[in-house]
Amino acid sequence: TIAIAIALPQGLAHSETIQTLANFTASIRQLPHVATVQSPLDVTTIINDDTSLVLESVYDAWKQGRIGSIPKHLATTPYYTQFISDDFTTALVQITTDFPKASTTYHKQQLITAIQKKINQHPALRTQYWSGNMFMQQAINQETKKDLVNLALGLIILITGIIGVMFRWYSLVVLASIVAALTATIGSLVVLDYPMTSVMLILPVLVLIIMTANTIHVIARHQHCIAKKTNSPSVLRYVWTRTWRPCFLTVLTTVIGFASFSWSDIQPLAQLGRAS
Image (cartoon, rainbow, N blue to C red; front, side):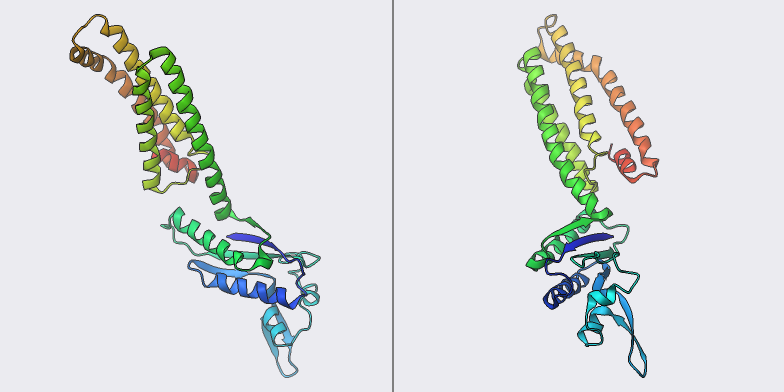
């Protein structure tokens, strides 16, 4: 569900505002995966037409001349202050969708973008406030992605600086490992189509920490051994045989621990477990 509170500067009593709001809701109904659209104009009313009772929306009744003022009519219904503010200057448009379970985040973002484009086509409706699970998830994802980029860049600069001071040219090795690890992590999230939520933000940071710790462990062992062995290939083989087991166990135990989240009933935690 998406809820949009739209400011109506001239109020719902103005005929041009009524027609603009009606055109906007009609255009939203044409979008894919939109099941229903509810607005103050869609409130159902019963009109006594002398010989019969007519059941129709207040917009249709107003357009046919069966009611004179929509605000006065809405004020007598239970929907007053639910779909319209008490001063009739803010209208609520509620949109429900029919996305199948297999739908991706990308498809939902496309719908939100399409709705925003429809609003921009009506200058009188450009002041609006959005709510609803689907919109809030997209807004949080966008802000979290910005935070992730800043955090990742900050960590890369910090870790590279510290390693550069301590290990000099080895910092190039660490930097290459950082870039490779983050690229693989972000790439896996894109392939799995998992949103970058505040929970999923843990994964790149976790990969960065484990990768850096393992790399420093290998570098420290290499520095310790290089003074004793002059043959570089021999040193690399010796370091590999001495370090792969603890590094592998570190990664394996961490993966098993985080993979247990896959059975969580909370979707963000379950996605974190599967991605890890």
